[in-house]
Length: 327
Image (cartoon, rainbow, N blue to C red; front, side, top):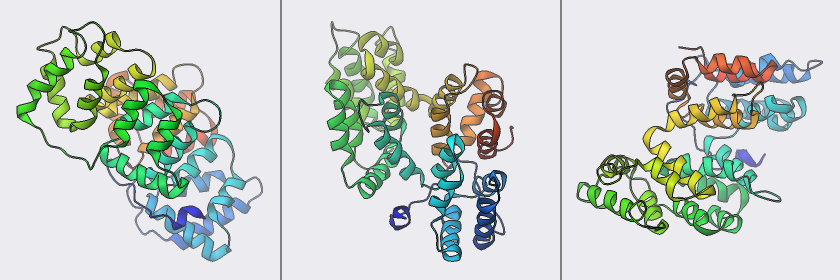
């Protein structure tokens, strides 16, 4: 029940989910109760309802369910579902910021860190998303996000992630006087010299606004024989390289970054379901529609077709329902 006491923030944005018309939380709650009680569980009804509602509507359904049954709906869903379908449905019962915060926490749990997940979540989220994630992280886990990150990473990789988690409120300021200076500083801290002055790269890439950095990267080409992504590959290695690349790819075209990541996760016969679930659930009320159109442009077939070819059963139905019909 902890989630119901949190300061719940909505999802909202360029997602697919529009508020269901004629929404009746009591009716939805009753249908979900019946679906859970049905012998063998009626997954289809659960999918039909919860993937076609917004986060705030799902929350209303959970409150109605608790009023009606005196039970917690999330616990009931947990008991009724399993596997990847369970991950999707329980993920939808969290706000976007709660989902991201929980995934970040999960990537730092136990022995060893899941760097790939940590990098994706911290380097692809906007400043305003990170401000919300930090607040929710503290509510959920009673710890500061930056302290957990510091305890789990090291070296320049840690310094970059910490710089991202400590940024102030978002801005969209383009400082025209600084574009040339920043572009030259990035070049002189990397490609121009032997070795790399990573601290300069970190401060510029974590302290400037998105539109400012987009202009800086364009200007960078007038100094460097390589573009920013090529320079990163030449200059740094390992997790630091991966982090800088995700940052730059997301600054240039965030939805294309997610489309490529989904394609990569569904390259072989099956699918890396954890990655597919994480992206689709975390972006379904943010920019999933744009990710679908970037996917189609980049790979010549729809994300929906790709999901059909690489997943199966109720899990597939839930994902397709979140994506909506292929355009």
